[in-house]
Figure 1 (cartoon, helix red, strand yellow):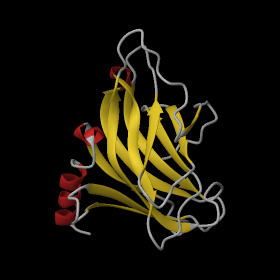
Figure 2 (cartoon, one colour):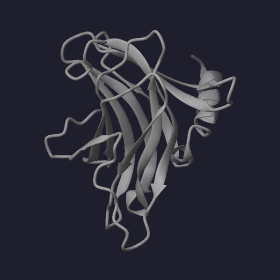
Figure 3 (cartoon, helix red, strand yellow):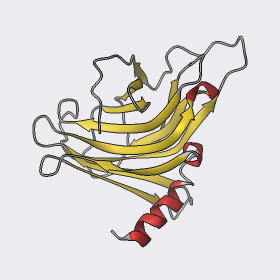
Figure 4 (cartoon, helix red, strand yellow):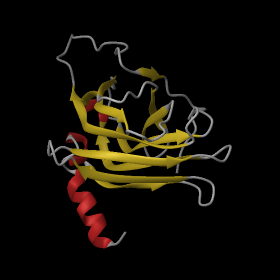
Length: 193
């Protein structure tokens, strides 16, 4: 892929959801000869929607791969959560678990897990509440050999990747949405490059 392809990818990404208004760069990470990841923004010809398609291969034991989305210290305290729609890709393997990490420059701030990718689009909502300014430098989507399940090679798609507005003062944020299983971040959380 050349510079023209990457320029088109950057342009298409801006139509993938409101999060990308804050994004300065995106790409993939993986250990060469030890795993593989590919991300591509594609436009659905029937709906015009832009979709993020992620392909992965985590066959070797211990491998992990994924997609990074870099933001310029986006203040998470101004928002109430992250939401998007996700689905499997027809006739492809798919991961049993996908990890979504919100990271500052020095640590993992929040970790969420997607564990129910279906053939049809399904909404996922991950609420958060940060009282003080908290700069996010990167969002990563991680697939690991340990948690991938039966399909060590496959693909899945995401669209409508949005930051949710902060609820009005005094209104509680739901503790656990129906379609997502949020995990608590911890000091032991595996950090990705």
